[in-house]
Length: 295
Length: 310
Image (cartoon, rainbow over all chains, first blue to last red; front, top):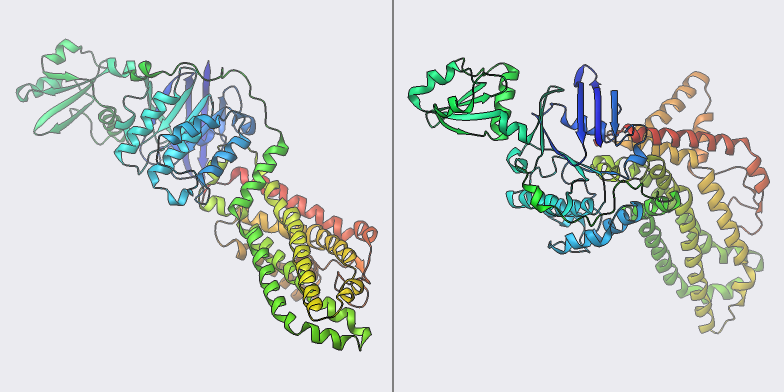
């Protein structure tokens, strides 16, 4: 079943084009990472999906128009938009009471169970908690909601590595199953690298890469080239080249260039690039400043 | 790469395909009002503090009460006024508190949640903008007048019991207090006054403040006041009249002209007051005001839909 379907999704703020007619399709059970530089249009896209902002073009979330049917949609969709949006005055117990009061799919016992694993006290106000604890509380509330789509917009920004790791571990172990769909944006790409099933790069309101992680692994190859074979490597037209400790690392897109893994293995050490490396390569080509092999 | 495949929890969740039963609007409204009371404790703390101050002042004043009551029996005509004065004063002070708390509540209601970004949390829950705005409007229009009524009655009861005790202790009969003042009628008048002059009549003012609090990106008080001052100023300069200022002023302080034909003075708890609910409910001023209030509220609901955190 298709959870999100967009065709020609467009959003303009004054003279700025935030979304330039994107097409998007997310199936049930996927964990999609939406990666892009600041101002690329990620948050605008998520806001449109969540019915927080009007848009042009076609958009269906769980078969509904998110702007017109937002109130109904929110029973099946939950989201964490940014860290620390829980009101600072609310007590932990009040937050539990309130969500239990208004959400038909909130399982209070589950939320209490998550909180029991933390050091958060029931009587504390949010303003008394550390940033990491606020994120834990928010996640406990959200994970106890039996939603079909969960949207996370920079949910771990500013948290230390321990909280970030815990956050995604909890999400995978205690929340995710194949009937749920998760869309996440983050700048800390390495945190979600092993979490995602699908990957999407977005830049200047356009989708510049859209593939599953299986595709990603079979399609992109990174070679740390032996110094004497650098020229041979460059002749194969890599999409990106960078220098690490004096050695050239070439990144190849196997579907676009006519090279195969055997040829590349002859050049040096072959491995799958990290998402961050591919991101830099793709974005670099986008701006036209770092054409691979042009040096 | 699918590390999550070994971490799938057994399907302990309900089948997500089943549409969840919607929570009734009344329950959403109830929880929305409760969260307003959690957030804005001044709604009940401020009148309670004022009541406390009134009672302490009254306790001090009872020192000379017995002496004054002896003197009073000589001038029976002024008895009621003198006895009733502190009770009226208490009610008046609590009404002034009601206006102040309402104004500051309204100015922050739709502004604070955008400033602290918590609107992103509230909007992640299935509570519509309409319910949220109605819950916020119910605070100055229903909750605060009723709360003020309860606190005023409680305060006056304590005052009555204290003065009765003081008079008994000094060997006088406290019955003067009870016979000279008809408390039941006073409280009935108070309730009527609060619901008409402090809820229905100023509704357009409070809804205007709510609207501005949902619109302003900063300084909602300023944005709420400037258009009113501008319209009043232009009217004065162009037409040399002050109708607009008079209308806004009367709504603001709860001085509805048609709720009652008062006896000797304007004070609503005066037992001589003859209330005129028919005239009030039939006055065009009330209905125009309520219509304007409804327009402001509808605009506030629509605005909240588009507004983002500041």
